[in-house]
Length: 262
Image (cartoon, rainbow, N blue to C red):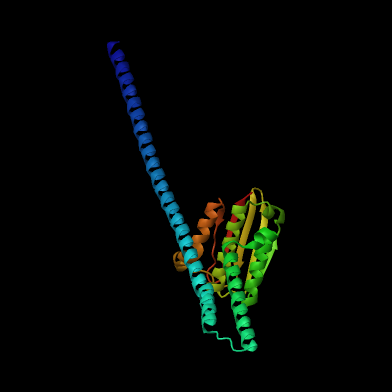
C-alpha cells in the first residue's frame, strides 16, 4: 500500500514538474515571439522613418529645383528683355519723327515680351486656370498647350467631375502638379504618342489612372527614373494622403494609379 502511495506521489510530482516545464517553455516561447515582433516593428518603423526622410528630401529638392527654375526664367527671359530695353534707350538718338516711332515700337515690343514672360512665370507658380475654370479646366488648358508643341494626343476620361470640383484648394493644386510632372516625364523620356488620363469614382474617393504608350520603364531603371521626378510625384501624393499603386509595364508604356480620399 505504501508503494502504491509512493508511486502516486511520484506521478503527481512528475506531472507537476512536466506542467511547470511546459508552462516555462510556453512563457519563454511567448517572450521570444514578442521580442521578435518588437524587433520587426522596430525595423518597420526604421524603414518608414527612412522613407519619410526620403520623401521630405524629395520635397526640399523639388522646392529648390523650382526656385532655380524660376530664377533661371527671370534671368534668361525678364532680365534679358530689360537689359535690351535699357540698351535700346541708351543708344537712342532722336533725329526725326520716324526714328522716334521706331524707338517707341521697339520699346513697346520689349515691354510686351516682359509682360508675357512674367505672366508665364506667374502661371507656373500658381495656375490661374484653377481659380477661373477649376481643376479640369486648368488640366485641359495644360494638355492643349502641350499638344500644340508636341506630336502627342492627350485624352481625359472624366467620370468624377462633381468629386473633383469638391476637392480642397491644397489637394487641387497638388493634383495639378502631379499631372504636370507626369506629363513632363512622358514628354521628356517616354517617346509616347498617346496619353490617357482617367478619373473614376470609388467608395472613398477618386481613382486617378495615368497611362501612356511610350517605352515604359525597365525594372533596372526604376530607381534611376525615380530620382528624375517620380519621387517628387510620390512626395506630393503623400502630402495629400493619396493611396498610391504605381505599376509599370516594361517596354509597353507607363502607368500610374492612385486614389484620393474625398
